[in-house]
Length: 111
Length: 115
Image 1 (tube, rainbow over the protein chains, first blue to last red):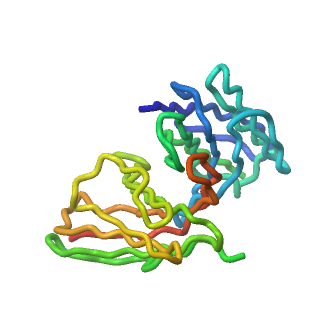
Image 2 (image 1 turned 30 degrees about the vertical axis):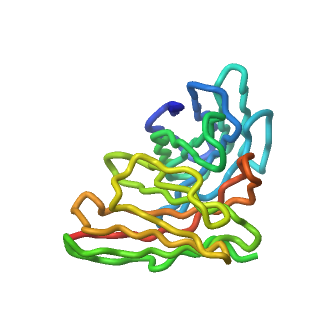
Image 3 (image 1 turned 120 degrees about the vertical axis):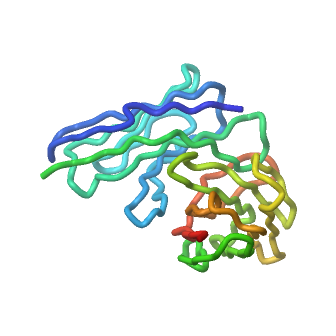
């Protein structure tokens, strides 16, 4: 099955700094989503981005499907951005909505 | 629009018991999928249901089963619980067609502890 690698595994920032999280995947995808997991465990949708570029406030994401990677940019980070960020992909080998998750990036933003 | 609703949120069981978790998808969504999250294995896909039929299945033993009702609500059942089944179980729904994937939206999860 498809493999997903996220980097870095851990990231510590000072408030106000910018960061880039990376997601590499091993095969072509028909679905790619970025999530932020809140302290209670819920996965919050950030982007649905199987290709192209999107922006939402201080966050933006780019997926280069032909090169099999996606990037999540966080600008002017805030303490509330802390948590785990997951990249998840769906491959063409299965129909329907099945996501394979990376191991996540643990982001800590210090005041 | 209401989000994905999972019940119960927390539960404690003992080894050998069985448990049933419930998931109500976003209105209009026909696909419901289930994931297990543990510290050691991360987030793993259990199964997906679409129009009351299991469409995809992950690599979990037969003790893990599910079903979907005509109103798209889904339940998953774990029988003969083991300590390793302690996990956060997440349900997701999507507005998907017969083959194309859609954006998945997750519920708050059911946190199961097996003693």
